[in-house]
Length: 209
Image: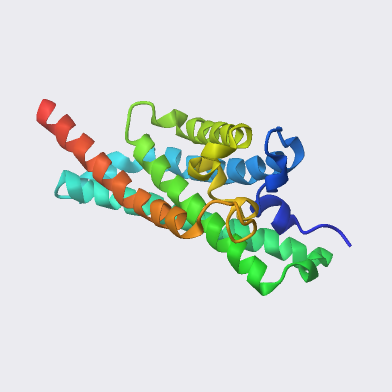
């Protein structure tokens, strides 16, 4: 029986890799993040070309920002869910689904969804700035670098963003893993913080014109 692709892509890296660079499991994780960011980046590029038209439909700058941020976040959610469904369908097709219990599926899914959606929020925020076209690469580096730091320095691993979406690094799997409640709360706050930072930036730019 083949190993579950769902677990490979979305469960993360086992905690016994602390102090080393886990090339294979980390590569699977970066693959999942890379595919997600490419999809979100493709949408961001397409939406950027249409933003002039959306400005005419919105009466205020804040209304435009609400529309743009909401659309980007919704696309991120849809992309994350679709990616999960496609990989789960693959596991069902090849017979690997039997190794995935309902409880394990729920834990992995919840952590990965919160993490990917928070990343989508960061993407929409970065896309607002002049360096927006580099957002996918910047977020990919953020994920990779913070994970490597967490692997090398165990004392700070629980606050490293690159660890947060991984079930295998969480307290749900390991006694010393990151606390799930505070991490989910932090990732749930990120979209709100991203919207506020973006609005403050737009207000400043409007005042400078």
